[in-house]
Length: 427
Image (tube, rainbow, N blue to C red; front, side):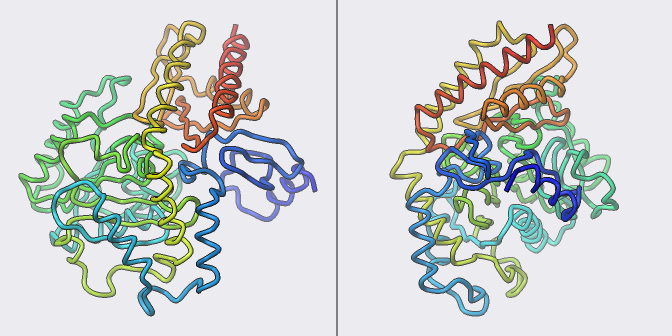
């Protein structure tokens, strides 16, 4: 079988709305490497969009799933419950930021987690409104799209969206948006668009994912906490992409001195298995009536088994520390290239949630074409990179935190070659 043959079949059998980055097809994967059906090897700096922080097919994850397979694969937790759900909830409750008693509910996808966080906030407050931020990404469901602050490709042609969703600008030093600007915009929304007593929640990402890996400044998070406390609003931290050691902490909110009321999680929670969740203040989590939360596949036992293994791996292999180590090495390499790559204007991000932003030299205009060129050159060499940002001019680096040092160093060499060749192509 050839990649080209499958590509033809894919185009005939599946809709174009399911966008696919690569034109090759996976045959197997191991830790930070993927081999396609023709035997070509790729170093994975995407990690399934931050899903396999613990690497492809970690032996502990594989063993945990196999052991659960020998017991049962599905009962529906809401019909016949099982201990692994309760035990994982206890672990998450103990480790999520914030001093108040917590409870956790599990779902299947990140969008589901976000939808349920909004439901919980509305049930707890009796209010409809939600404030989100430009550049934020919260999923492809109707509410997820409404909350998402990025039109292309997520919202085109899908309206109308749920009402009572409002957006404010997110702090962005590259675009000249300060923390004060963002907080002032939130306050303006509460004056001009919706009264505070109708706002159930404010939702934000500690580090924007699709939006460009812009980091929420501490004073911004404190400001949101102050506004929420003043008006009885629920603060939701969307940690679907930032969670589980990616930023150098188990949860990115551990970098701040205030806590969210509710936190959404998914992606690397279960090492490649579909599992998401909401953890938050027990009084809020209990606001929904019995039967109001859940789902047929929510808290799937195979995914829960994998998640238990993931938490053990993060602790035993010290992946939070490893994230910081790898991230600092990547940032140093990128900074050293700034002189040779005038398009690169910023390198940012905590832990191993690193991004580089590119513009046209001299104009400051976002340069998505340069990013596409770098991606193509890297892929030719066997390195998989992802872009992000409202203008598509940011490269984000999401390698597994378990990547071998030799493979990581090899990838950095390939990245440097791709960057320099792309600059040369522009000359």
